[in-house]
Length: 121
Image (cartoon, rainbow, N blue to C red; front, top):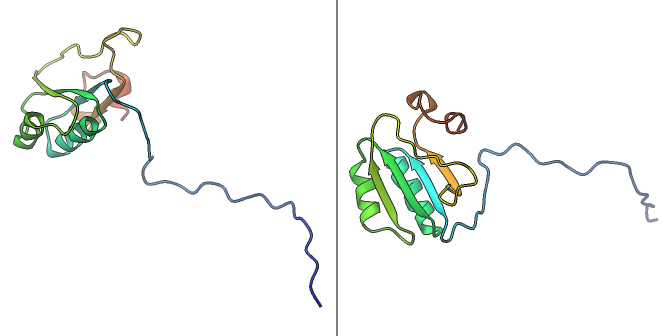
């Protein structure tokens, strides 16, 4: 004999915790700002460029890897700005030159003068 099935009120499973947030952004022709000089920053610059972004990198002393990536970007231009101190790299949010994406490769404790949104990354 076949057992009869009835609907249940059980809730469907919810999303489990994620180690990383998979984000898909259309960055073709957009400006991205990256603060950092390390190999990790070079990887992020290369990733943003591969997505078509024009990447402005702000670093006191860019790594050799960063300079190599900037010299031969996969797609979008990578411009390294050698600046120390407190450069104003964040235009007003509605400005035409405002970046579509900002990233950092610094621990927040190393960026005391960065805008609050950057320090929380």
